[in-house]
Length: 345
Ligand code: CP3
Image (cartoon, rainbow, N blue to C red; front, side, top):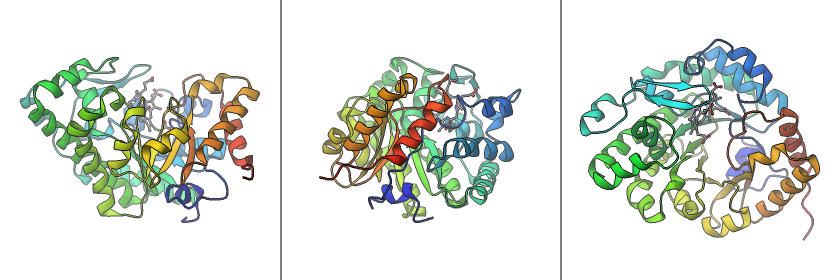
């Protein structure tokens, strides 16, 4: 397992071939996914170990990617502690009673491992099936989870989230600390059950300027990542957000081994912002999967070239696979990455 390409790249050991996997590779476009999910609500499907195992394995079988991503969702641990919420198809997470005041904190208790025995069971089933292919566990970062709780659902501008953060910094800090406990425990259960790496998704944190990120978000994310490090320092930690060009250095400093880069910043430029001590992951625009193969190949090669500036590179998209993506285009990217040979310098 320690020879796995993904783990070598995360540990900055420059493997002979660049590893590749895709955010949202499970679900979305695969017909075999739509078939097994038929009639089963999203959140329920995340809690059935046999189904989680099957869905997680589907993209590994079809694409030959270098890692599996655990099939779950960032709101699963919130539901597990008793927050009233649902995932609406085509919309995303919707919260019954959005977070407004200090009294709402009582409705978000701490997460204990016994509340998610099925998650540990799913990870054990998966690692037994996957053999040498690493399984990536994941959680939502405190800011992104808070944004769903406060907005009540997906939002374009995160106005209510920012209003809470700027108007009541103490309540905000207490909310993020609680969410850090929940995400940290969610990851520790996955690590204890056998995942090889973890990714902390702070998808929407790019909405903040650097100074506010440093003062009001980074400490909570750092506490999640250090909860994983304390349990097992050998498990690489990947940290990703969208539109985080201005935050890349700070996201690495929150305690990541690998910084996920979205498609807006070229990887060589990202390396100058992140520094030489961390690997990078990214960063093909998911929309390019709808472009002709020649264009796609050229863009994949450009990303692989730019990734050579980093001490380790894991190929991925700059965000998740979009609905309607042709699975053959995804497979084409995997094969193109695996066939690539860097030009001699
Ligand atoms: O590869 C994978 O799909 C792994 C599993 C995975 C899901 N969600 C399954 C899912 C992962 C890693 C996530 C993370 C997640 N969930 C994030 C962070 C990653 C990112 O994209 O930024 C966020 C912000 C969420 C919240 C969420 N859940 C959204 C925005 C949506 C999509 C709504 C939509 O349909 O457009 C969901 C639902 C969801 N999570 C689906 C899947 C497969 C679709 C549900 C379905 O098939 O009905």
